[in-house]
Length: 203
Image (cartoon, rainbow, N blue to C red):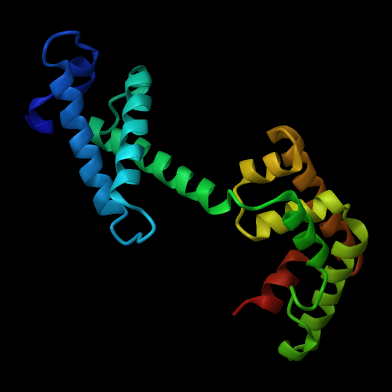
């Protein structure tokens, strides 16, 4: 049984005797693709690959009606599988982050230990911009805004930031949006534009 021979959506909706064999064939295809995609990840074992594949199968079967035929069915299914795998890996990466740690990181954003100090920046303009940025973080953001910005700069997934701060997605988005606007207003008032920042700190 190969992918070429199967009309996947039709076969996966079947209640006949071939249903189990069809599901198993798709599982093998997805598992093989996942092994290739994650072959360089030393932190992913075979058991996790099996779990990712099983979770993907359940979602694929539940979302069959969402397949529009714009690509091969197996391409669509592989995309779902990879999304599940990478989402879970990101979640596990950050699962030990606490609200206290996020808050502490936010407090450190304006400290020289966190942002480069003048000894590492030879350009006086870069130093001026950095000083304005530190001041903005220290004086124009609330503690929760600093924590949210710190999480974003650290690459923390948005949903994880929301969860740690005890906010729903809309409230967390507004918190980050307001923090960015506050920083921008302060920097503009100090004569610093987005182009100035990109130019000063570009490699």
